[in-house]
Structures are given as structure tokens and as C-alpha cells.
Image (tube, rainbow, N blue to C red; front, side):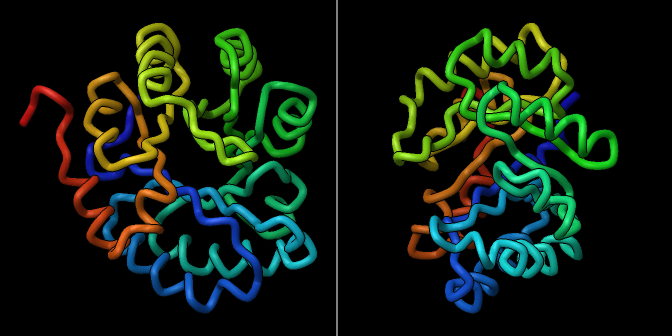
Length: 212
């Protein structure tokens, strides 16, 4: 199961507070207008939990007409209350099992921050809709690109659930595609670029390695 080449991107929003939305909304809308974004992970800034539903609802207003699925980070209840398309859970523990029980099959449940192969296999066997490798940890650490590529290639060769690989840099996209990733996740490489629209366009244009 894989996505069309034209819709293989999964964007992680910056960690947003309610005061960030007016500035972020037009940038977000412009990125989704590319038609290449299949999914978006809404991330709420620490301390902004009281406004989390308003933040997610605003993003959903933009994502839904663009045909992009909007997922909420680590909060299955918020995903349901806000009408989001699903939740992205960190790890393969009790929180993931609870999310699967409460949201499936109506909504998407994905898993990330899977530190070991055993964690990834546990998530896959539990019934997640996708696994993600290489995304930033809560402290900001991003695993080395080679480690992410190795994990993606292993998963893509053996397992059926789709695989998402995080590209910390534009230069990482082609290698992930070559490794067999179904979706390429991007965050700061897009939002911190001088022009997020141009950065995404450049990522979309990259073919897998060896197909240049």
C-alpha cells in the first residue's frame, strides 16, 4: 500500500499557540494548495493546551478543503472532540492501545517515536494505520538520517502498514523515497525556509535516488 507520488508528503506543524495562528494560517494554506500534502500533524505548544481545540479546529478549517487529513499529536480525545481525522501517538504502549480502541475504525491512528524494531512491530501488530520513523523527539533531538533510512528500508521490505520517514533536510527526501517510504514527513525544513512554498515545491520535485 503506497501513496501516489504526487501526494506523498506529511507535514508536522510547528508547535503552535493560539497567538501564532493568524501568522501561520496563510503559510499553511499555501503549502496545502500544492496538492502534494496527504496528511498534517497538528502540534500544540507547551502551555497552550487550554487552547488546543481552537488551534486544531482552525487548522482543520484549512486542511479539510485541501483534502489533507489532519491528525492530532498524542491526544485521542481532542482528535474526536475537534473532529480531526485521527491521532498520532508516541510509542507503542498503553496510550496507543487506548487510541486504537477509541478511534478505530472511524479515524486514523498512527504511531511514531518507536525507538526499537520491537516497538515498531508491536505497533504494527496492534493495528496502526502507519508507523513513522525519524521524527524529532520532545527534546528536539532528530535521529541521524542513516538510522532513519535503515529503519524505513527494513519496514518497507517486510511489513504491510504504510511507513512514514522524517526528512530533517530537503537533501534527505530522495534517499527516503529510494528506501521505499510511503510518505515523507517534513517540519522545520519547510516552515523555517525563507519560502515554505518554494521549499515544499523543491521537495515535491525530487525523484528517488537513481532516477534523476
